[in-house]
Length: 76
Image (cartoon, rainbow, N blue to C red; front, side, top):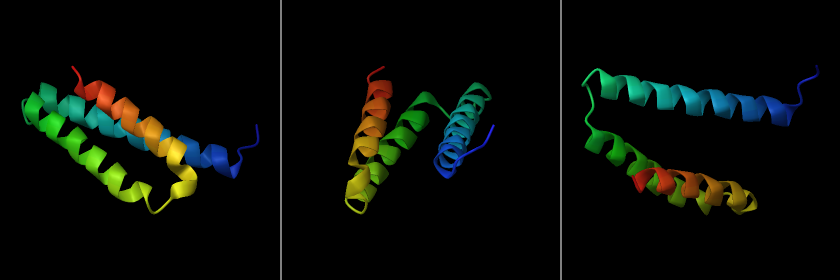
């Protein structure tokens, strides 16, 4: 199977996202982070998305989707 540049980029982003999520879960289970710490991290991620969205308007759909996913997770 031939990997295109866009597929390689998407794969890299998936690896980064899942590794980060696994790290946060591990730190939570080990008691290094508390649930409010995890919430704070995701709130900071939202802020970063908002700050970066203006610099890449051609990717606004991706920013909107990412923001919606994070916001849904914060509703819990």
